[in-house]
Length: 115
Image 1 (cartoon, rainbow, N blue to C red):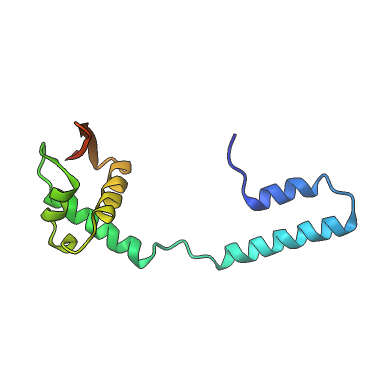
Image 2 (image 1 turned 30 degrees about the horizontal axis):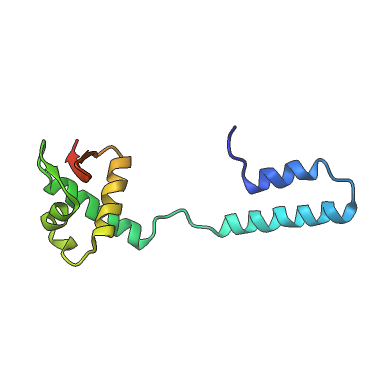
């Protein structure tokens, strides 16, 4: 089952209502949601753009066939010198979801390899 949007859910509820006040309330909620969605920007934030740039730098610095721990990846890219390991891990995890790196556990330690 696909996930319904808020407007789709309100529209479905609206078909079951008979009370005029309830109908007016749901219609008002639909209008508010539509107005909120119209003002929303789908552009990436500055932080998302910066993290995408860092991901590209990490990918370019990694060598094919070599496995890296997070601390080693952090040392590869000078821009990550002041970054905490959680930030580097989050960027590498996003790269993994994009199928740019693979993750392998060896004795409880995560190693990442360029694909």
